[in-house]
Amino acid sequence: MKPFNGEFIEALLKPDNPVPPRLTIPHDKIDRRFSVYRNNVVASLIEGLEVSFPVIRKLVGDEFFKAMAGLYVREYPPSSPLMMFYGKEMPEFLRKFPPVQHLVYLSDVAKLESELRESYHSGDPEPIDPKFFENLEPEEQLKTRLIFSPAVRVFYSEHPVASIWDANTRDGPNPKAGEEFVLIVRPDFDPYPVKINHGSYHFVKYLMEGQNIGVACEKTLFQSEEFHFDLPELFRLLLTTNSISNVVSNDEIG
Image 1: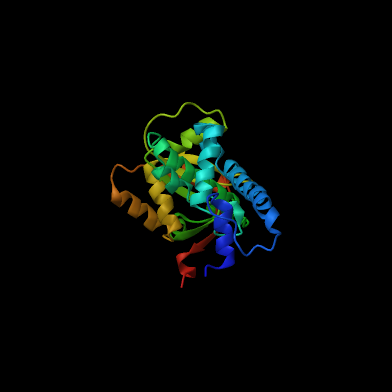
Image 2: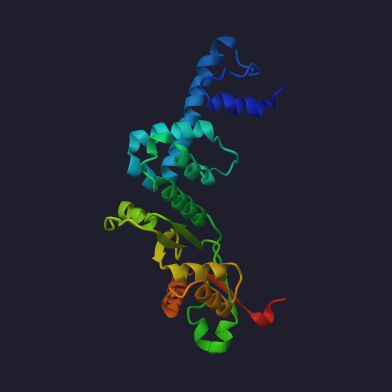
């Protein structure tokens, strides 16, 4: 016999499923009450998705989004009581959803919005003093390993996802076709994406993997002579957006 919880959830989210037979409600009232409850639950989940994916909603329109979200809810019921993260499968859903196959960028925009939501709910450690590196000799700087705020993310897309986000949330200019490398930062309460170049993207990835500054520079430049990045400007961005929460020298490791 299927566990009652699973049976109940399936009946809630799939209107073709019958009312669970083990509900202890007078028989003449079961169908009506359960139908009202089912509609309320589905509507609540759809509203949550509207809040989580405002750019997707704007791109496809309110009515289409509601209908699409209703299908998503039935295909991907909540698997955790932490509803602030509900919708993590939306990028995969959009990749496979036939009516939006021509909107090739939509899945990556959904992924960006998911990353922004996770960044918003991440921890908030005290950032380092922006003047920290002024007191270090150049050789010491190269040996330094950075500990990033858990809110920081790096993101790559074949499509101009940050530009699309900017155009639909902050009245930015119309996006131009092409790939984008994105750094997600959260200096205060709300995270936002910042476009960075190819070299900066790989450099930050190496730093986030635990490489010290010197090794991260070497690995980035070794990958391609075409990688260019303004190291002082990148560090200014990381420091002014409170993206670095701690530093560790090689002498302190191990």
